[in-house]
Length: 177
Length: 108
Image 1 (cartoon, helix red, strand yellow):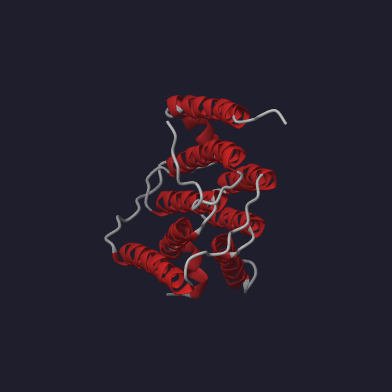
Image 2 (image 1 turned 90 degrees about the vertical axis):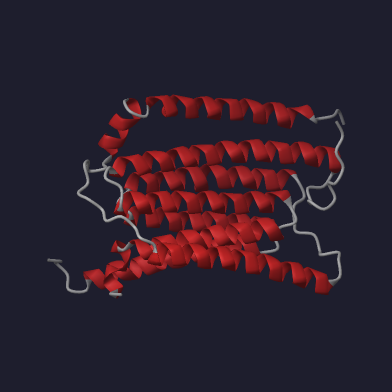
């Protein structure tokens, strides 16, 4: 039994806050006109996702989400924003045409959302059996070094190649002032 | 649907992942700068990770596998951001613009 009478509602309230943070971050990320606010929305969305990962029994991934997305990805994008002029341009076409395209985009995304949500709510999902491992950080570490050692090494290779490629690409177009 | 039991059911996580995917695709269609499109792509990656973690938590026999897969997805997303941003910087040096409408010529 829970030691505190309202603790279930407290947990549910925190969960609702985390879900609201994720949704608000995603909406800010796609709807704001200034691109720096959009990056801040992505950071907010990542914080909410970290909370969701915590609710999904994975505090390790929650920490990794904050570390990688907020700490690395958002900071990198902010550097990209600082190095180029990035605000959304004013729409140049006729306003009726712009609104038409916005309606088409909204229709496509609402259709995708409705289809996926319907599938996930009413689909025939398998019933979970008893978990074989506890999914702790120790189990993850052992799996990374035994079963998944090849993907683990390959992803380090991918990151190395990405860093070298980024350096080469960003250096290439530079001209003397 | 019992409200306090909501964090222990897969439905809301699935709906949230579908919402993130839908917003990512909407942004990918609507954004007119490359960095905005990159941010939308990150939202799509986040949706994929959330979906993996939900299935991992509620349906998979081994809860460690999904966490490892999501860790790999995060690594690939970070690599993708690094590459895409350097391409954006190279394009900006050449064209003085990263608006997707003005970059309409290719040279081999």
